[in-house]
Length: 155
Image (cartoon, rainbow, N blue to C red; front, side):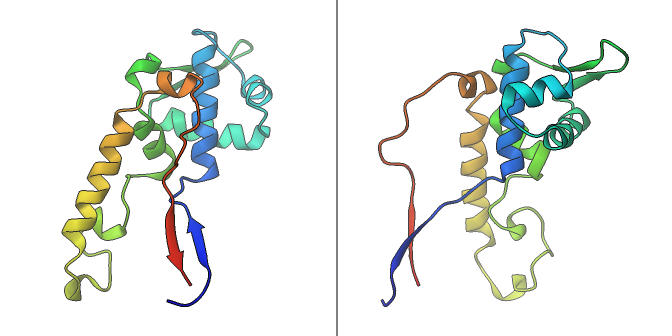
């Protein structure tokens, strides 16, 4: 193999990361209704970003919104009952490694490829792992993993 070994990561989008940050702040408010501006300030994010995230979280039922002078946002359920997978799905859509692992007919190579079943297995394993981590757990400080998952590829 030629080329330089590079480390790549499987990633969620920044918007999903920000959604988890906003959800952690909502959870920390202990049921208090917070404005989008207050959430932006507490999470150190830009207001337009927080507003976009909140819109998606409200749409999927993870967050309640209230109108009026005392309006704002609050978390819908206990943090122990909200999984990271739910938050990711609210922002990204279904958790899947490839399009074909979600639905038949989305890939032009489907007729010539036998990998769909294996990609589905991987997608299910990842989704289950994320289902097993709650928002409450994400809100707690944790020590970084000594050897995080890294995938080495060769150019």
